[in-house]
Amino acid sequence: MFIVLEGIDGSGKTTIGKRLSQYLKSKGFGVFLTEEPTRTWMGMDVRRAIEEEKNPFSQALLFFADRAEHVMDIKKHLDFGDIVISDRYVYSTFAYQGAQLEKIMALEDALLWLDRIYEPFRLDPDTVIFLKIDPRRSMNFVNSRDFREKFERAEFLSRVQDIYMMLAEKYDFYIVDSNRNLEEVYEDVRKIIDKQL
Image 1 (cartoon, rainbow, N blue to C red):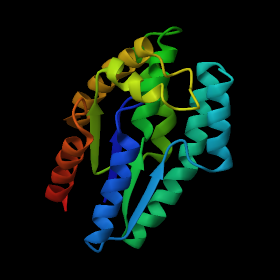
Image 2 (cartoon, one colour):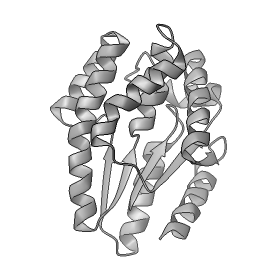
Image 3 (cartoon, rainbow, N blue to C red):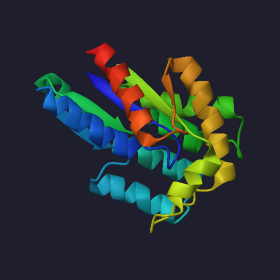
């Protein structure tokens, strides 16, 4: 089973992913908890490109290089019988890079271009859970971090979330309100996964 947690920065994905992993392990499942960008040298290059504000095309291509390797790793764990939980996946690229590329081309064209790059190594998740949060609220969590990416601006995140909502409709995501206490959000996510098992 391949589970993806999506949402803008500060929506609680990382914390909920860790808790979900612990919960599933306690139920006896093998779990591979992962993230994008990955912690490999490729993922580090993605983070560097973001920090140095490289152009949107370069950033997108680096994301997909990292993802191509990540997909192979995910497949190995799925073949082994593990449940895979990914904190972000291709939909983050569609939303974030889509919002950046929108300044250069129509969003529809940008999303089509991104999807064509993804197609040769496509691996669709079984379940995608989108944690929807008010960007102004998310910024409260983001601002407390030492490292801030240029993505972490309320106006930009608002547009990213709009694109996520379009993707949620297209790809049939589960949508969970993340404007609440994190315990309540986690419980909703856990219930969704319990129904999938």
